[in-house]
Amino acid sequence: MRKLARVGEARAGRLADWNAPEAGPAYPQSPCLRERGQGFLEFFTDNLWGTLPCSWQEALDGLNPPQLATLLLGMPGEGEVASSSTLIVGVCPGSQHQWPGDLCSLLFQLVKKLSDLTGCTQVVDVGSGQGHLSRFMSLGLGLMVKSIEGDQRLVERAQRLDQELLQALQKEEKRNPQVVHTGPRHRPHHVVRWVDPTALCEELLLPVENSPQSEARLLLTGLHACGDLSVALLRHFSCCPEVAALASVGCCYMKLSDPGGYPLSQWVAGLPGRELPYRLREGACHALEEYAERLQKAGPGLRTHCYRAALETVIRRARPELRRPGVQGIPRVHELKIEEYVQRGLQRVGLDPHLPLNLAALRAHQAQENRVVAFFSLALLLAPLVETLILLDRLLYLQEQGFHAELLPIFSPELSPRNLVLVATKRPLGETFSVLETEDS
Image: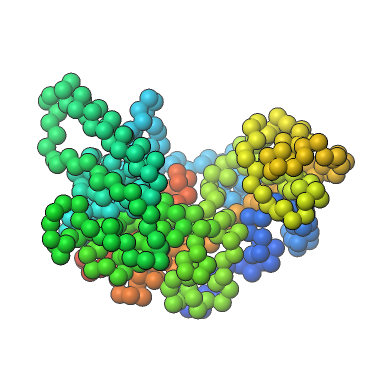
């Protein structure tokens, strides 16, 4: 895992820069990017290209997508060789229980090590969805797991998958009797429950087995816990003595309450320019590395941004109060003429698809496709920085209360943009975190 940390050190290393009190504003103060964030939808309606400095326009104008990938997002240029990825993600065909390579198993092993090091008796997986994380930790690693999810349908699906996996394991043991399962095999204990980020959830703290609650030592975890759900994990860890450890991977930062979900720490609350508008938080969820690969391939799918921005101009002319409506996916955009895309988009937002269109204006918009992609790439550069600020705020929130916390980059961001795990314990354990980062034998 130490190798993996080095793979992600360019991304994770930026955390150190924030520890200096003289760090200054929380992120670059370029008005066009600070306010717009990922707002490429307004590229034409608000003349976003014109908000860039003239020198930027001259430098970016005419660059093709592969050049943008190299110059802005750090991808290797023509003739250069990309560094090999430390992990390969693969899913076994036909197996709905197979995990995507080492990507998830690294997180599972980290939780297992953290549980062992802190003497936890139970893992609580919050926002568990279909129970994939819970299933592996309980049936694969022998941990006692409570799985909490608010959607009844997802819980029912998780229980069916539990049963199917148990049956598959039993059949495998019959076919290969020499393979004996020696460890405990617990089913996850599924609970249907919404966790209120602003209140204490008693269900989250109850032990699965009938043991005195004073003896329970809980490890809270959440894989891609959405918005305020990650904040709820931090608050339960902070105020509940029975919670001994935390392993959290956040997601959906645009769903954070404002105020309430950010900032959490006193240090970040005192930063000038710490405010994160919705669009910046939404942009922090984008996968910069994945988009850089799309630029490098220069596929026709990149024109979707330009088409959607052109559609926004037509929508606002037809109904000025309707801004940034959600447009359900339009298939095979790259095969459509821009007017065909606009007509289908109008229908999806409830407008007349036969509205008269200014074809000359649409063609002029389409001619600026590379400019739209360039502007989106610029805005995307802020994504890792904004995510860093949010995660650093959570880290400092825990450290300000005397807890021991670190952010661990346990796999390459090329495999998942959410590659930083916030790990925390309530008492010093010597080399705990270095042990967690040690490569498995």
